Image 1: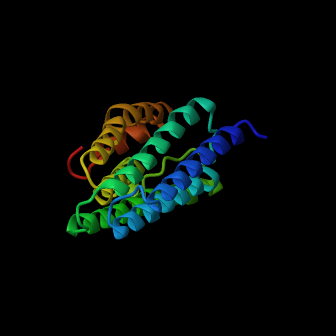
Image 2: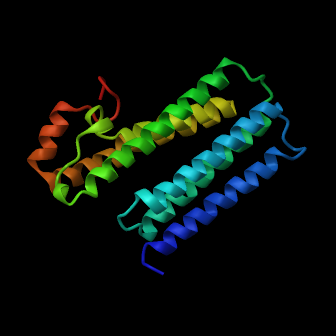
Length: 211
């Protein structure tokens, strides 16, 4: 097994097990939420799992070390289990907030996946070797994939119900703003030099028109 295959397999298995356990809970008598809310939360959990697997096994062509797996794996398991727990125990009726959450989830999911696909297609052209990709959604913000995940989990939290899921989505956004983005920007500047500095000078990092 290749060096990055084992970490990917462990994270994928843990993620799938969490979703399977969560869906079993949503289908059980222990879940007290309306059936429609439970169905929606279960569907969103499965969709995110599928997207995660596509990202890991199709989009992600760089190495996936154990250090990253041990950070990503527990986090996605916690997120999924939290969303399904609250989605199974929130007894408020399904209202416009839930459907707005579905819309945000769809927008964020598309933004994350489409931006990664655009970049992958660009990078696979040998003529673009060593060239910084700044087209598509990356022309709007430097990190559309991070913005997409933030929108996705904010919407997921709105569907699940309660405040704790929203706090998890806020924690994810904070980790992007103060952790992942500064580290990645430093790497990109080191790798691409003036090309990245010029790009960063004219493009917001995370929120269009804000930052």
